[in-house]
Image (cartoon, rainbow, N blue to C red; front, top):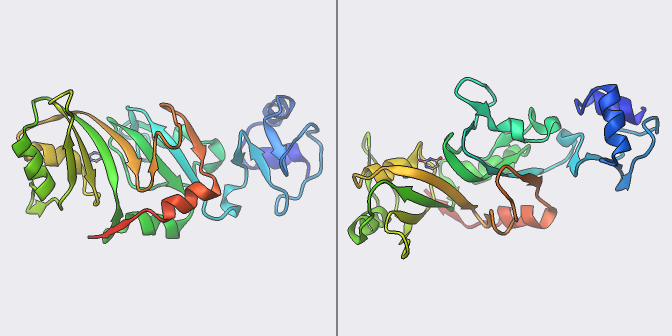
Length: 242
Ligand code: URA
């Protein structure tokens, strides 16, 4: 099949748009920059990438995309409550990838996506969760006593109690705390802070399992595919049985 047709069929753009992308050197075929829109490719054998993203993502096992989520985007494919965060993903993976857990519309930080159902289950199954660390800014000062309560587990309402968490007060700002949780209950951090009569004003996830925004060198709104060793690192994140 012609390369430009293959790209159109995979929703990279219209025939003239993909020609421009090829001209700009943004398409590679088997790690070589493609120059000819009419070149012949075999979609089942050749690996075609657009800006570093595989064009036929479904055909690739265990693909993980990491995004530094900005505020204002919702973890949903529908536009009901805000702009879907999937709009920040390369167009060709929007349909086939799911987010690994969710972040609230006003939460920023590391959000992962995958097309690997097994990996998704491994990382967010309700019984086994990996560590997630948040930097939590609050309306009021957080006391040592609050920190102990949050570490031990607090009543989240509806009879739910949070599991022990790792909490560290920020020495420079008494309204900021870092919390590492091993579960992923709905609005968990906000409900934990509410249980100490406080309110979250900003929530930022710095890490998910063994991966962090810093180690992946992501800037706000930026995303990229993980390489094989990063995927292995993610898979080997310590799990807590919940
Ligand atoms: N806890 C929350 O309250 N919100 C998030 O987005 C993530 C964890």
